Amino acid sequence: MKFTYLTFFYFIFPLFTLTGVENDENRDYLNYHRQVIEAESLIAEEKYGEALSSYENLISSYEFVFLRDYQVATQLAFYLNERQKALRLLEEGITAGWELKELKNNKFLASLQDEPAWTALENNYDSLRSFYLNRIDPKLREKVHEMFKKDQKKALGALFRIGNKAQENYGNKKFAPHSENQMAGLINILQSQGYPGERLIGNDYWMSTILGHHNSISEDYTKKDTLYQSIRPALEKALASGEISPYEFAMIDDWKIAVVSNRTAIGYGFLNAPKEETLTETNLLRQKIGLRTIETRNKLVDIESSTGMNFYLPDWVQGKIIFEEK
Image (cartoon, rainbow, N blue to C red; front, side, top):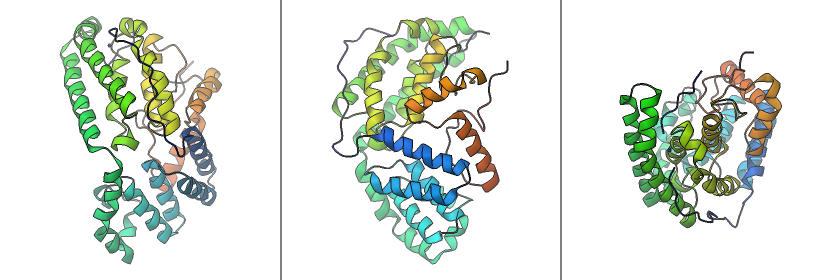
């Protein structure tokens, strides 16, 4: 079966030495993500108290903590009926970008709003959120948002092309030059500021979508493209410095693997359903970037169903990751 792309493409730009922005403190976020995997493995074994302790240790050890980890830790504390600890973690989550509107709509944590401390939390919300707003770069955030909106607008053109051939022609002739300009803009950002993800701009979707589009323009284009490969080392450094999450990196890279191989190569298990006979290789690929195994993910889905907690798993695949049928 022919692979259908999002219809998104290469041009020859000068190659740069991409280093990103190094942090003097807490550089090793690959170790950070290994600690998250350990905590998730404890959750999968229903050792919730030990998992919470692991998250608390993680939070106290790193200057920057991904919002998802505050969210999971808060829910674990609440599930264990440690309500004051849950409120404290929730406040810390607000300083990392957790929005009050989302909190109020969170059914699992709803009864926390009955706590006397909730009123104080609401009153202090703006002050707590100021920590998040002062951390991110608003100008860079707006710049990347504009890039994302341009990308979405250009991608809409593919919807009006009927058939794979028409879509590939659109990708090669129309989307490719646009995407190459986008990559040039990203190179400038990488060189001067680092990868614009959750840590720098408070968003983990815009730039990873742009890169995913670039890696899925067409099979012919993606096979010839060397631009992404020139950027990839900077993404690996950004992964180690906490500027990009394993989820973003996996989706970007999974597109390249899937398109170049016409869905035959072993990837991260999102775009290509993993095979049982090559599960070890898939898990090793995931482990290398700090992503949980397929088995742990699927156990976490079961725990979500039984407890009502939300572990904020990547929703590119709904529910469990199902193995490819033989």
